[in-house]
Image 1: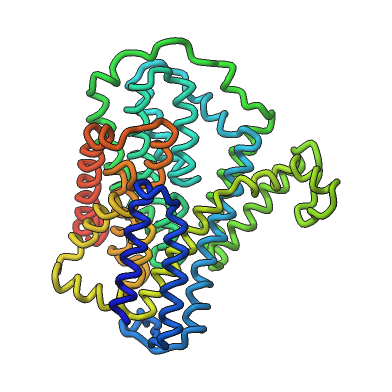
Image 2: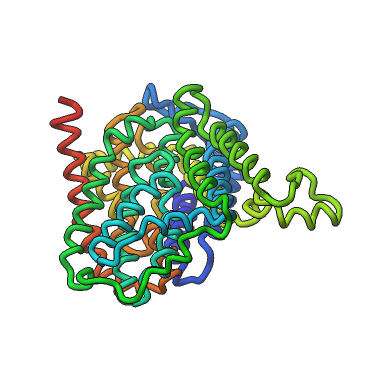
Length: 446
């Protein structure tokens, strides 16, 4: 039966990878794969195990217990993401991100390249790389009218956003997964991955700044009137929302509670101010009746919840529980052993994870790594996985959420990106990986 399990998993994985060719949203194969895998396990009465990381061995358990265990771990990630997404949507409701355009005062293409790259790097570490890319490309479209030039900027923004998300526990879904699974701590992740991520961003931007396309000045005048947000509370909500998200790792460090608890507290605070600043008051728990239904459309919280990308949440739910099925059967545990025998150098294995994340989604890759390796919290392996999975996806435009959304917003051609941007992402990835290894071996562990 294990052969059938592996075939179903690989088939689902392939369908997720080829979602653009099949024109089927990846949440569909993810959910189907998850349900089928657990159904096969239940109907076949297969033995399931829990990985004992301390003893590095498998311990038998019951399917109800292990499924509930994995559901709880998955729910921690999903509720964390729901809270973060809602805060971001509340900021957008007040047009808070328009405040960022006020920082853009130059018309020099080279300076704009560095400015957008630095903004992408910092923003993605706070509001995640996907949202940062959406915000900055929206601003980019208002600043640069020439599409060909804009494509180059968008390509570099993808690299910078993915690099920025890799060193922050709240900057990328994969780093969030490692953080919530207690594989990395916030401070140690920053200490070990920040400098490699900076190198991963700076090298491609520096090389690109020498290109002819980034020389000279942009044509036309900057649209000063668009710098002011549509809401007078835009700037307040931007700084409040970003501060609330940054507060979450601090809350976890102080209380030792799961991150989603801190995120819910941050959401409650931001939502409170959003309701105060809104023209109408609305009780989110009362949506019965025509009057409340109508009033709900004026509530920033209700509006923001309706804008959340539930397909992404469902995809994470499906893929994480599908990988959990493989882990519960001990397949990933044994696969790790075989991989270590075939490739004794763990650094090469992790870098292959990074290259693989450019071809297939990095979420299942990191989810699989959680079941494959049993190293303790803050082991260098987990920091390297966070870096590789977070930045490796930049090498193909379909290799990261930031790339996919930029592809949609700017209609970037896959082969244009492969020809012009992929090699920049590759040298950045390799330079950052080399920096990580040097820091690990000669500086941080000295």
